[in-house]
Length: 320
Ligand code: NAD
Image 1: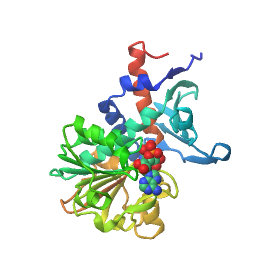
Image 2: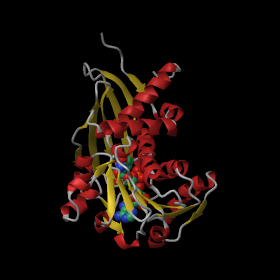
Image 3: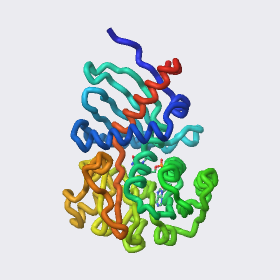
Image 4: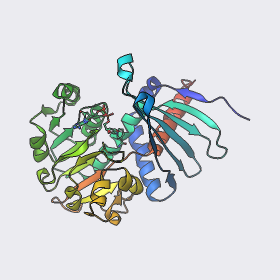
């Protein structure tokens, strides 16, 4: 018998997807991908010429419990109509039958699960004495990234840079809420002084130079999720211990694509963050090494978060 699919909007996601629930969901996905109990399917990413838009589909299956996809992308004309340029929807399917069970608005889920992913890397890889966080980028994702990072580790100072400095106010407000000092000393100085760096740009060039990064730094490179995007100089990969959420994606569409293409690293040195979360891998081995998390974003992160929202909102009679 088929039941009507449930629709869950961003307001319901905001009510039920706490940072704790997002973290638990993303850690589960990291572990299950590492243990090969889950499959992440190849990403579809195409241009829609008529709207100058980019459309993508990410999908995956987790054991016998989850099957689904996230469809969406970037429509640059939306802002002129008072809409977000980034739009996405998460579709949950029954893994036994393929029937649809829910459609969940994807914008807020994306922001919270991506923030949870980089915060998990910070909790695992930042030096215990790390006190300064550099935020490189101040677009839509950045305030969520900063909020999750400040929850994950007791930073004392946030240094932030964005191509358009007026956007930094959103990050300053987050730092203020956490009672953490906030400065904007420029790109190079932010990188040089940081113990932890989050990059969350839609850049196609390596703005962060390898020799600016001090020994002992942890980087969460979160912006590169497409062929051609790039945030850091590939030489940095040759100096770092590298982790990712999904190795095939890291090599193809993640930040590692450039270091692999340049022959600077072999693909077998990229480790799965799930190995660290499940305690099969030690993670950081010294206070001097640089650790780099190449967070490419997998649909199962959206799917497991969406499922958690669906369960919690249904239990409260809030889903429709
Ligand atoms: P946004 O459009 O709101 O912000 C883009 C940011 O990139 C801004 O800070 C902008 O100033 C900066 N930027 C763009 N081009 C630049 C350039 N050439 N030089 C310097 N800065 C530049 O986007 P967003 O929603 O904040 O997403 C940021 C990036 O993260 C995007 O590339 C997006 O695709 C990616 N993303 C990744 C994941 C993941 O799971 N890894 C999830 C969501 C978004």
